[in-house]
Length: 365
Image 1 (cartoon, rainbow, N blue to C red):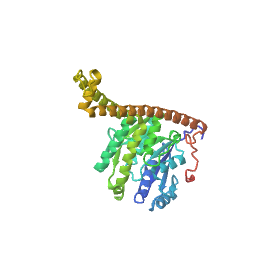
Image 2 (cartoon, rainbow, N blue to C red; image 1 turned 135 degrees about the horizontal axis):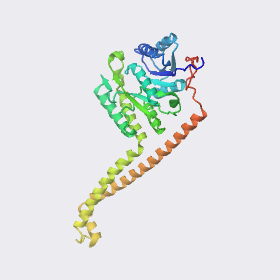
Image 3 (tube, helix red, strand yellow; image 1 turned 180 degrees about the vertical axis):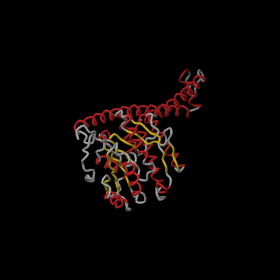
Image 4 (cartoon, helix red, strand yellow; image 1 turned 90 degrees about the vertical axis):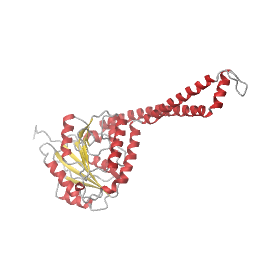
C-alpha cells in the first residue's frame, strides 16, 4: 500500500548449546514478548543450535514447525560462541539484530527496552549492563561476580572508561552496521571484538541498566556448575582483549615505572659518587673516575640494577611506541576496508520485503 510505513524487522539471535532443559520455555517467552511488540516491529527468532549433543536441536525444530517466525540453524559440531554468532549475523537481514542468552538470565523485557533505546538514541549498539547505574545481579556466585567485575573494569579502562559492561552478550545492534564489521573471534571474545571495532569506527554505544539473574528457575537447575572452566577461560580472554584496546599501555606503563625506578637508582648512585669524590681508589685513580670506582666497590648491585632497569625501560617504551603505531595502522586499514565494503555491497537489511520468507535457511559454513 503506497505511503504505508514499513515496520522495522527485528532479528533475535539465540545461541544454544545443550539447552534442552530450557530451550522450549525460552522460545515461548521470547515469542510472547515479541508478539506484544508487533504494532512496532516485524520480527523473527533465529536459534543457532551449536552442535548440541542433547535434544536441543530436535526440540527447537519442533517449536519452529508451529511458529513461522522462528527458524533454526544447525552446526554439526560445537563451533563455540563466536562462530555461532557470526553464522547467525550473516543469515539475518533485520534492521535491528538482538542477541539473547538461551537460559534467559536477562528477562525478555530487556529486549523491548533495548529496542526502544536504540531507536530513541540512534546508537549503533545498546548493551544490557548489570554493572551500569541502576543495574543489579542476583544469585551470581561470589568468585564469578568478582572475576566478571574485574574483567569488565579492566576492559572498560582499556576501552576508554565509558562502558561498565564490555563482555556482555545481551545487546541490540543496528543491523546494517553489524553486518559491515569483519569479525574473526571464535568464542566469547567476539563480544569484546565487536565493541573494539565499533569504537574504531566511532560508533555510538550506550548501555541500559539490566538485571542479571542466575536463579535456578531460569536454568532448570542443571547448568551453572559446568561453567567454572568457561569463566576462567573468559577471564583470560578478557585480559588479552584489553591488550587489543590499548596495546601501548601494556608496554608504556611498565616502561615508565621502570624508568622511574632506574632514575631513582641513578640518583642514588650519583649521590654516593659525590660522597667519595676526591678519595683515591684502589687503582690509584682520583677525581670522577676514582669516585665512580669507589662507589661501585661499595654497592656494585646498585649500578647493575640501574643499568638493567634503564635498558628494560627503554625497550618497553620503544615497544609501546611501536604498538601504538601498529594499532593506528590497523585502525586506518579497518576503517578503509569497512568503507569499501559498505560501498560495494549494499545492505539488504535496511528495508526488507515484508512478504519475504524468514524461514529460508542459509548454507552452513
